[in-house]
Length: 200
Image 1 (cartoon, rainbow, N blue to C red):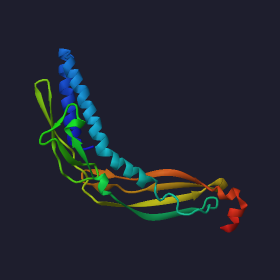
Image 2: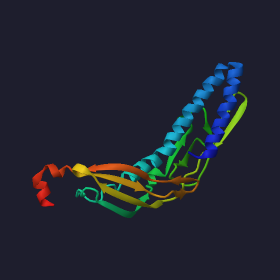
Image 3: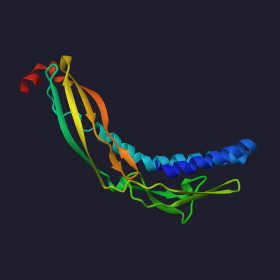
Image 4: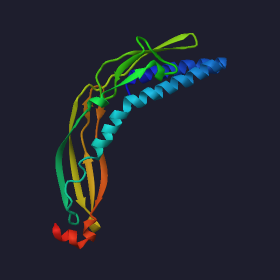
């Protein structure tokens, strides 16, 4: 999530937590609970499209051939992956009725970007005790397509199993980075069916 948004939220929580502890103010404790609920609601809407896209991209392209490799056979490949951010995943609508602590500074509803969206921002306001709270919603990466190269290698092991390794350099996404890397295993099941093996 956007760092200034989190820092502002954390500072507000520290301020109110200190007051609540010092004054044992039941109302302040309730307000903190409402604030946390709103933060969780907004965070889920904001970050979920990006985490979904990251999962889809990290699991793609692992299998480049159905054939099993010979023992200790090594292969390397340089690949490129491109993903497009669908319009439906680039923004979402928030309404005052969605929140128990915050309200929109202007209007009763607004369309704000997800982590994959543009740089449009609105202000959310609330009151903790007698202290006004004003937070700016985070921006998105404002990119319709994201492309990155990655290196993938495979090593043939025993019994029709391959060890797979994938690594990509960090890709700059506005104020954050995106990187894919991992290790996996591939096992050939067709070797147990002679009719399938004969067709290869």
